[in-house]
Amino acid sequence: MEEHQTRTIDTLLDHYSASHRHHTNEIIHWVCVPAIVFSFLGLLWTAHPLAALAAVLLSLIYYAYLSPPFMLGMLLMTAAMLGLLYLLPGAAVLPLSVAVFVLAWIGQFIGHKIEGKKPSFFEDVRYLLIGPLFVLGFFYRRFGIKY
Image (cartoon, rainbow, N blue to C red; front, side, top):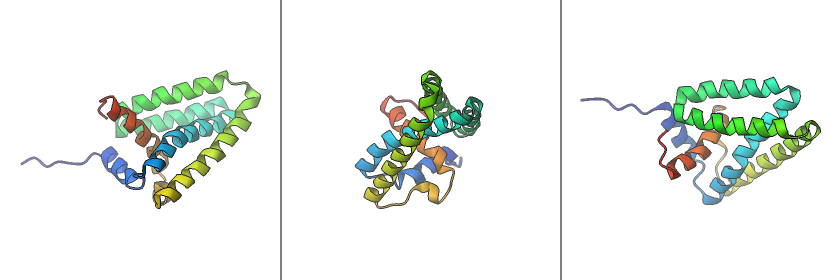
């Protein structure tokens, strides 16, 4: 009899989704998680564009380990974000990134207050990288993309 092993990505997403079941919290996450990724990349971009690129590349290595289809989705998403940062006037990147970062985190904590559960990354910092996959997973399921 063949033994079934749960993939790491499935375990991480199952655990993450346990504290993201309230519909309002999910909607908040759909908006705020990509906003946090964008603003974080923007903060790194202001230090040096290569810092943002390095963060993307390191995260893509982790995503490739977890799920090549998720890695591809994150590659497309982060490439679009880096492209937008490139197109923004240099002086606008820092204030925009700080404002979006603060507002998006406030949104996240409001969502978790509504949910009644603490954010997953309080338990394990890896969940900071799983949040974007949680959001991307909604789109993958909607369009029948296997991850």
